[in-house]
Length: 345
Ligand SMILES: Cc1ncc(COP(=O)(O)O)c(C=O)c1O
Image (cartoon, rainbow, N blue to C red; front, side, top):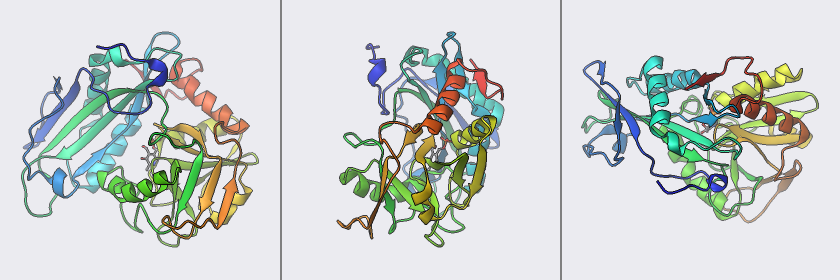
């Protein structure tokens, strides 16, 4: 294995030692197996290729200050995958199998786990896809569950984008009212590819979606939840069409531990002008500051009708920084894990 530059990992594909797979057919999951080649043969009629019979997860493993390896809240990811799969009417691995395969994935790829001190981690990507051949639109009877692990540093979206810049998506929605926005299914990400490309071409790093029913309230960013600090409050949108982020859920607890008021409620767009700090939060981005947000009539338009400014685009505001340090400390073993969130290898 070539020596990795742990300080400059970014968030990108790397071939690692092994992926762990299990197949579900006839009501049974096969014993997990490590595969060294990632190019597997699939029937071209598999549902995953046509009807997006696919859902996935994202979590991280960290090498702590004490040398221990910690996975952050894998039980939450297991539960969310089961919820997503249930919405697709596909079989999902039980929590015990999910956890076993995540741990095996880290063990098999342990030489790719970044050492402590580089603000880097191993991103674990469990993915569940429908593999039996089919022609009609139907949920898959046979599924493949794979757990992949890749070393990652900070998430900067596409290359060359300014940190902390975002644009509002007025003419594209990532979710529909009564749709699938709250599930981590592949189809949701297909919806946001084109608007993301438009935003990225204009140099914006993030894209903020509005609630699809009324377009008056904030939903979330395409790859992360929205979190704002307003006085002593932690404010995050309550909406049926946003992904229930495990990072956001954890940060709400951390904020409450700090004595902050946690407000999970509909957030009107106009309230942006009253926010002290605005961030994107999620497993990949952790807490990433949003320094400015442009409002445009459409993503294609050259006109900017309003710019909201929230502070330094390259640095979290003071309250967000405090939350960031606490959560990263728990992951790195420098802060006490009082809520028992981490699972040790
Ligand atoms: C659309 C979307 N929202 C929010 C999140 C953050 O969720 P989590 O904190 O569980 O990673 C993600 C990333 O997983 C995401 O893709």
